[in-house]
Image (cartoon, rainbow, N blue to C red; front, side, top):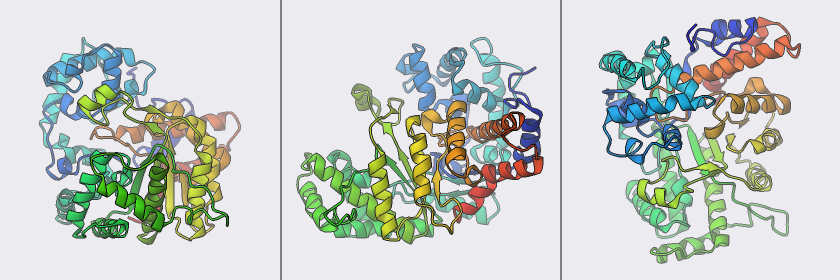
Amino acid sequence: MAFIHEDFLLQTPVAVRLYHEYAKDLPIIDYHCHLSPREVAKNRKFENLTQIWLEGDHYKWRAMRTNGVPEEYCTGEASDREKFQKWAETVPYTLGNPLYHWTHLELNRPFGINDRLLSPETAESIWNETREKLATPEFSAQGIMKQMHVELVCTTDDPVDSLEFHAQIAKQNTENKLSTRVLPTFRPDKAMMIDRPEVFHPWVDTLAEVSGVEITDFSTFLKALRKRYEYFHAAGCRLADHGLGRFPLCKKDENGETARAFSVESVFKIFDTARKNRMRTAVTTKEVNAFQWRVLHELCRLNQEFGWTQQFHFGAMRNNNTKKYEKLGPDTGFDSIGDGSVGTAMSRFLDSLEREGKLAKTIIYNLNPIHNHLVATMIGNFQDGYTPGKIQFGSGWWFMDQKDGMEAQMKVLGNMGLLRRFVGMLTDSRSFLSYTRHEYFRRILCNMLGNDVSAGLLPNDLGLLGEMVKDISYRNAASYFGF
């Protein structure tokens, strides 16, 4: 039997039926990814597996470095064929890593290769077979999205982005040249980077330019951000995404109020000081925390005002290897799981928004699994009784985006909340081949439910469980985001 077969990961008869009868053919809503809108708009055609598989994939780069592969074959100047060979040499060493599953799922769909495992010996035949298919229209960026039944994609976009390629894609949708909708997501992380003047100040200058607002103080800074909210909303954006090491901590004032502790007025001085001293970090650690708290709070008010869903990704310890960061830049495979206390800061931040009636629909993703129960219980504190699943515990993210991590997240959510209200999976990927992560997730979900039926923990009611599978795999996301 092939390693990737029709019942892959499905260990019980109930799991098999749930997957094939309820999950398998559902469309995909990929509400968080890092695909290039330009590559979609231009319908990029990939010459080989290296271009579609290894470009920008820091998961694979980490594995290759660990296997003793020099940087030349990861991010360097080696040829595409040489890079692919080094990946093929690494794959047999990824047994036990989700990369092994993902690699062979992606060879199976859409390439239809399941009679060989990728290895140094099979590299040449797989290289040649996939190159032939990649040369056909069905394997262009848009062709793959169509093959994989992708209904909607949300990319990750800086507030200063022109969104020109999203406009081109929308035009193609209108002309029925592309059925997949591609919408932007507002990712304003740089608006909070006052502790990194080399990033913050050029970004603020660009923000002023694209918004048409002369930024002279903190109030005009917020005005410029609002202009970009309006621009993104008009382009179909309905999500914001905030990448946090941890939530900024705000101590309550003498009246027990959180939101007043870091007032707009106090942040005016911090902003002015930073802007007058651009060439050096002119703010203290305490001021950085105050500024970041207030900016994030103002952004979240706007999320609620515009009717967007806000996503918080927290817990990453980024750019640990300074030497490599200086040479290769961010998002190149030198990040890890962070630690530290997060519950108090998260609680106070969400509570400050709730007290004002400004808490938008929210998804919280944690990178450290020790925070699973914290997040799963925190979301129950802020449900409003009107919007089903308003505050969500996001799917297993990054290092937790694997079988154990996804099962752990869903089991904790099931114990502490309502698993059936979960908005499900996303790819968080830069690759057009990553849509099989939705298949992977659906198989894992169906298998988990099937095992619980076998253990007598869930009723053997295929109709009931099947509707749950449809909800989590597709329907919840379709109704939740307001696209």
